[in-house]
Length: 437
Image (tube, rainbow, N blue to C red; front, side, top):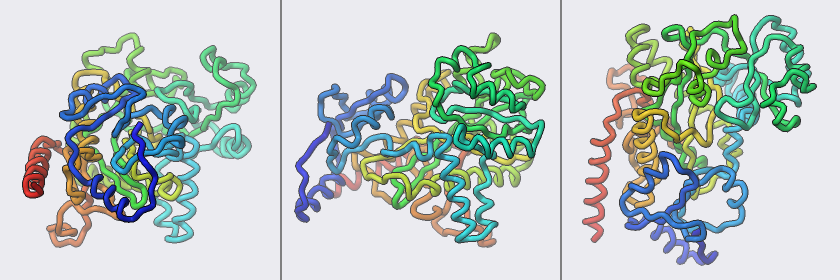
């Protein structure tokens, strides 16, 4: 691990800041994963992998390692690591909802009800067992609707089930009708009970959700980037509410869908988000689709703002979040969850290519090599969405039509001509380097 002497000398601090900005020709890295990110790091020019006891400049770690080690290491100015210390404030399902509810109340107090309504993008949710009695009151007020139970800290659809009867929850609490898989889990595990979206937008009769990538390089000030690529994950079976026990109908996780008897690994169950945007535009028109994507931008920003004052900001940290968004039949986007460790294992060649591009561009934004000026609004496939305030699409700040509308610098589902942008950035970086010499 990278270590150094702690000092309070101002001139030494100035020297460290200068060192941090200097271009680096050799980056020592560690990687705790053996999937796409390992390939991307291995192929990056000038980057060298170090063993477990070696000093490193960059570490793509697992959250378990972070939990055990972050508070016990000293990191020099230039060192970077891929998680914030308490990332779980946004990425554990119960904490995410708690923080969004608190933020919504704060907005209502400070800015009024209309502003608070901009946070109404997550289904009604209760944490169990802590809010069991509140949940029961809500359940009895709305008989007959479908609810979904999710463990707060698991992924890939594990432990999730749908229910309509309170008896199902009572039995579940008593361990009476849980499956063998669920019985193996600790009985104290927390769940969230969430109102199930019963009217999802369907394509070909099938339900899907979206995986969108947001990169945060700082929380104070908040600096967030939105990736142009992403994908829609489809269920393998046509949607119906008459069978709530069939996971292949209701859960779009690839880990579940690939176990379906008729799953085709060549085709997979994914559309690229560009394909989805084109489909929706052809069916509903550009105005409705632009509104939909603006509403998704609102989800990204409001969710990050809800934890901005809680996340322990650290200049050594960045976070690549995987947002899961569901559309209903009215084209309203709903936030399902935010992942601190979005799957980097590819399910097809197209998926592998997307994740390689995403991770390469993440490394470009983090900029261990010191090539960027810090004023870029686009780096590869990433567009700067928020920089201590909204970022405009054009330098003129306002819409060129003269209507005075602010156009956000987001291009989700648009053409990702990242190579052209990266060539221009590298050309500028080389000029800067030559001038410095």
